[in-house]
Length: 486
Image 1 (cartoon, helix red, strand yellow):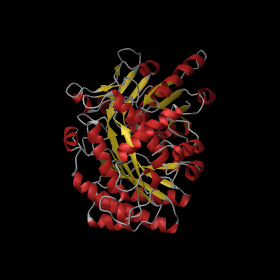
Image 2 (cartoon, helix red, strand yellow):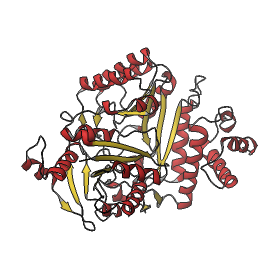
Image 3 (cartoon, rainbow, N blue to C red):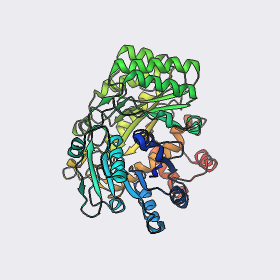
């Protein structure tokens, strides 16, 4: 009854909490379960050989937009390698397959698909496969009513309908992080699940918000701190939604980082910063707190159109506070290609955000140093299941049919303009976000200049010189930056 849970992570340093939760909630079958994790750039033959060597009777694969095509490639390669009678039952789960249309090619290689959260559904399915019955804590009738097996259109596989998991009743999985995970990787944790907001480009608000019991959660965090975690990364979409809970968690980590230096990363609602939260954040020392804020766009009409909640002026005011009065490393998200937003609008929003982050808006001599903030410039993706598709006709939204389903053009933004922004985003990541050339930044961005216009022209030139925006040697990039007229 060997069960193998596997996934292809974006990078080696990103271990999957989801797989560990599935294993931890298998009940008596947990001892029969093995976790295999791969990296996106890892050779295909290494992934195939590891799975074949494990000889699974049931293979569960977690699928996201980033590993969808790589997982499909893996399934096709395994299909050619299985000996007669060796092929296991194949189960797909994860955020990508939870919302895909039933005729998606990847489903042709699956026996079962679990949509939504899988702690209960996966355990039930394993018992069904190995014992022919639903041997779980729930009565059979209740399980069958809530899970609703049905066939796919173009594949002989079954889908298990979505269950909203009661987080008070599932087993935690933090003990399944290995010593190697603890010492060398990001450690993912979650205090809450889902998001209350209905931003139309996001899957985060498609399920109700649930809070994990706080005291057991903090006890688990204490154990991880003692084990030597270097970076905690919270999966919570809206960490500061419940201010009292957020304060208790921040107080815990504030005390812990004074005993041993490490970093904790939260994704926060940028408009929810009462005074007591500000005071706590002020007390974190440099390098111990990282905050992610999803502004997405500064265009008020577009924000209303996609149901992006929050008061923009208040968000920028809070962002300026975080820049000037705290040691937090800030990661601010913007999205290009949203319905109704032109390149001129995006340009204006980017420059306004830059002014707040760099301190030039108020002309303060206490501007934050480069490297203490990042602007993560993303391209709109039409994620399966999200209501952003309702704007397709009215705003001329055209998306790539292949993962990650990025927008190709809109009525307000041509394909050529989007390509320029994508190129901008890549070089911005290489040069600015990574703070690769701190000595050159003052030359690149003298105070008062139009940052977006200047950098998009620079990124055009760099692409023209290198013929690509990836795989560029750092020394070659420095040489080019030093010699290009700016």
